[in-house]
Image (cartoon, rainbow, N blue to C red; front, side):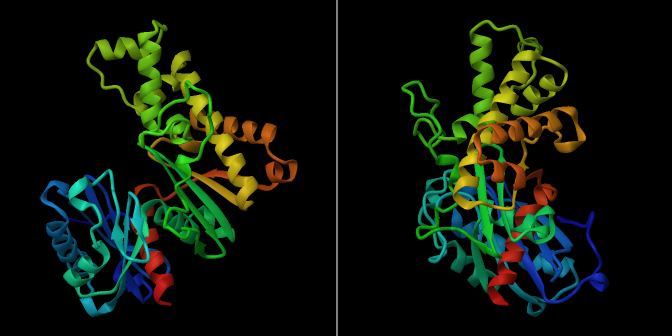
Length: 342
């Protein structure tokens, strides 16, 4: 079903036009985007990973034409398609490698070329974290800078690195896998979702927040979250964040520890990349600047940076929240396609 909220009309838009796609494990988002990065039409469909990639590629091709039609465009008026996906991938080859969020049926699948064949349009392939970062760089707060990094906090930790309009994806398409950098070499280091110990993702993801709260409850710590779980509430990062905002000390300690480790990760990025700006995005941002907890979270990140980074980096690197939310992926994918065909 097409969505039109916060969209501009075709008459307000500037050609050429692009379709951006954010392929997820549950849903796939589409957006028709103009040359200024403004959305003309949106669409979301179930990914249905269990049906396999061939079926999905066919439905994605059909949805591209559907969302273009909803925008008032013919297929010939769409210049290119940007397709962003999570998981390990071979970007030059247009293949998924072993995408954990999609399952083994999708391993080593040539998704770029199959989607292109299904819709009859050129398709540019990208990592989803890179795409979200590019969206924020193109029309979000990153547009003020030539170099920008975006870290997305969710089930895992995503990272997109952009320098002078180029995405740093690396020789093996793994350049932004920053969640799997080592931050803890101790024998009791937390285990990441990838199975390795001590990775940054094991300390700053929503998954880690849930694990830490479970550990606190099992250890007998007094927390309002335990009472809510007894009443039937579901344990997730949002619940922990909500209770932290209400003053629950265990929840607040967990959230602030996420901020501390995120700051450590940023210090390492700053000393390696030296970006002008680092944005914090994703589903776990604790209300951003609009809430006391969101402001405290960012301040803890900043405090950690001030304590551990070179002074010139700490003073000059902008730390801010991303703004595009769930639209960043498809907008950035469209932007990457735009840059590729210019």
